[in-house]
Image (cartoon, rainbow, N blue to C red):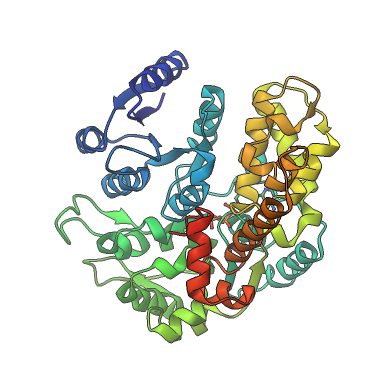
Length: 444
Ligand SMILES: Nc1ncnc2c1ncn2[C@@H]1O[C@H](COP(=O)(O)OP(=O)(O)OP(=O)(O)O)[C@@H](O)[C@H]1O
């Protein structure tokens, strides 16, 4: 039984979800606004918070921040419309466990919660369950990543894994650990993005009772938990600057001191970090320590966005389909040619995570033995395909659609940096702004 908070201003939806989750053995509290949610979070520690992305006045991001401030192990799942998928990706970068798309299917939510629960966010001793089975893509990029994993795994080198959200960085880290001599020892993941500055040092190194307000008992830090194994620091770019120096010292000296203690404890930990930012650029901007960067940068692996390795798409799609079948007791064999076509055309800004979610949703909705275009999220059925049969097409709106698609694709490519996008599109920034307005493209 998990303690779950459901946050949505639609009270009928809340009631429906509550009834369903209670029937499945959970204890559920509802909140219809951010203020209700905040009060509930302050009063109780929830295992799971399920929040709508759009709330009156506030957003799911605020609920996420509130829940993580109270207890960073709370699993936050964001419910979002497909139009907000980029925001959902942002929420994940800030510590949300996953998102589900609206219209929400209760079975899907339950499956997401069940997946999340045994994996108490972050610190998971490595287990060889299906949830972490590493699937090899067949694209040139994936083959290269595989080669790098095999080269670096047996060494003790620190590794930086660079790639957009949802590309599979944590999976690469787990695979390195699994293929290393450390694989019988723990793999410990810390999400630096969800780590409040004041708790970061204590999370890494532990503390002794009474060393600061709130230190009500001795606490062992993650360096000690990971001893002999691998420490995976996700979103390393979000680590507060002053904590970076402590981290560097621990890595270099291979010893730590619990906060409030003078006793040095030797630790043997291999460090793997992940980032979706350009750390070197952060070094140049002065937000990431250069000495730490060089210490970590013994080996770098770049994981390409799914859009750049379309050869992998169906390998993963079939794997996620098989898993979803098993999870939901269904037996859908494959995808129709139109569905494959639509998936290949789509840009997948949320990468493998988005693909997995789209397929789980499709498996729930699909009534036939193959996934059809109709059960895929509408976003995925590309605008040009959807409109190809409409008689109202004319040269002007065909041209506009193509222009709009090109702008979106370019923005995604340059991670929404408008200066770079304008340059690539060979237009000035002002023209780009006008076009964004004209097509209602939201870039915040
Ligand atoms: N090699 C893989 N084999 C099987 N599934 C994978 C693989 N890589 C990624 N996935 C799937 O994609 C999801 C996202 O992967 P992962 O969490 O590793 O991405 P990430 O790049 O670390 O994301 P973030 O930057 O948001 O933390 C995983 O939950 C998993 O289901």
